[in-house]
Image (cartoon, rainbow, N blue to C red; front, side, top):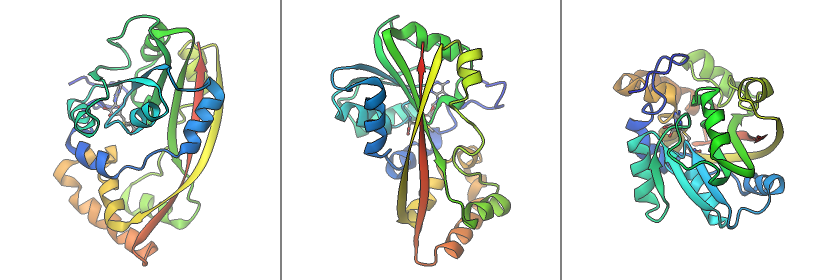
Amino acid sequence: MVHHARLGFDPGSVFDSVAGGYQATRPNYPDSLYDALERHVGPLAGRRVLDVGAGTGISARALAARGAIVVALDPSLAMAATLRSASVSLPATLGRAEALPIASGSADLITCAQAWHWVRLPDAAIECRRVLGVGGRLALWWNVSEDEGAFFDALAAECGIDRYGGRVRQDDRASLVDVGGFSDLVTDAVRWEWTVPIEHWMRTVQTRSILAKLGTDASERLGAIEDVARRFFPGGSVTEWFTTRLAIAIP
Ligand SMILES: C[S@@+](CC[C@H](N)C(=O)[O-])C[C@H]1O[C@@H](n2cnc3c(N)ncnc32)[C@H](O)[C@@H]1O
């Protein structure tokens, strides 16, 4: 286990126990996100893409579907094994952003979906620049809950569950440019809606790192979360609004 001094736990193994639920229930990113990515970096078809923090392959599969030549990388054996069984033809390797097992200058694009907040800076930024070829880019994206209603306030107050992306800004120019050493940053965002039955939404909530960390001790907290969800969505389906924020770092 790699102890992360800032976080106090290893984010490379925190999802191990929930890998199956992650693959089965987390939403895909919308097509409009990949359209925005292509507007900024050009067509993905034929591009050599390293997907860092690939998890169970949600982003890697979508990039490959657009014709990119993708290698998926993640430190978690459980997440990588789940990716392998879901997508047998997608190359996957174990590794961390801070020490990429990849030759220098060999990627046209490095992507990091919903994972850059777990990496150690500046090490990960330095490694990404080493692996990027001339003209290469690092693209980060992550979901932010946009619900303005009382649902997320109640989840925070009653269950200690924050909105997605509410605390960490991964397009922070200071950390990517001043600390990370990139020369510039371009940002974009797409908005989308996700509606699922409460049962599905509850399985997704279980894959949040804060609950995955608790293991079986999460059951009481999960009961309280379900009570809130049923109170706010008596019809039986939860709707969430997300903005997926995209940041493209230029070496
Ligand atoms: C929230 S998941 C995102 C997975 C996937 N990219 C997606 O969009 O569904 C975060 C992933 O980052 C991985 N991770 C944690 N620390 C990492 C590090 N230092 N380098 C690379 N990946 C890391 C975790 O193992 C986990 O699979």
